[in-house]
Image (cartoon, rainbow, N blue to C red; front, side, top):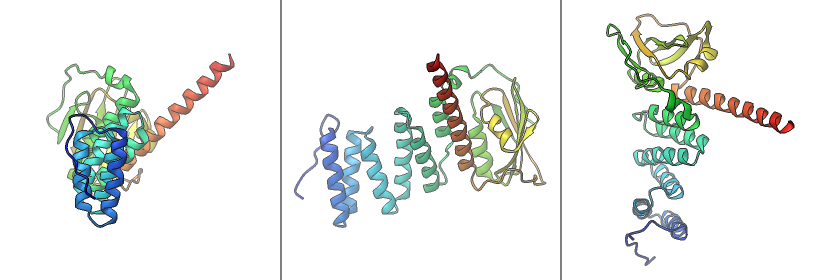
Length: 253
């Protein structure tokens, strides 16, 4: 291949992107993955919002065990898919990024997806000053630190303890054993049913206190991230179904 790739002053066109993707595949086929990486890297610099280029880079990096770069591409793809309102794909890439690089915090991505799917959360978050206790392991205001952030901190530190959330609508708690969610209580309910309510809380305060004794396991999860994604997906699907039924009723009239 004698083609050279000079950086143009304008983004790569769709035709050029197809050509780049084809050349990248040929480089890999003929055992020149470094050339494929360089080609894609330069093309992404010129067209950073190209999903197809980033997906190809992700594929090649995974196959070549370049997991850090693959994780970076996944995070970039999360934002691009959110912009296109392809939230399921955004969830998939966010989860994949965490699997590729466990050091990555998924909290910002989860919050971005939730805000994009339900803009009212971004508009109605109450940021008025609230009293936060200082005699606990850590605490904060949910208007600034989301539940996802708090869960991420507890999981990373593998702490056992109780996360208490206080808002105008609910007094709730989430129990953790060595960083894993094991139970939840909210408005007289517990387990997954309670957690489904808790994940919607976006104002008020939270307090986390450690415990020397582990809690009974009511919610069994292998990964907090997967559990959060599953609950969010279920809630979104239920809302979509309800909206579809409302639309059908409106059409009947």
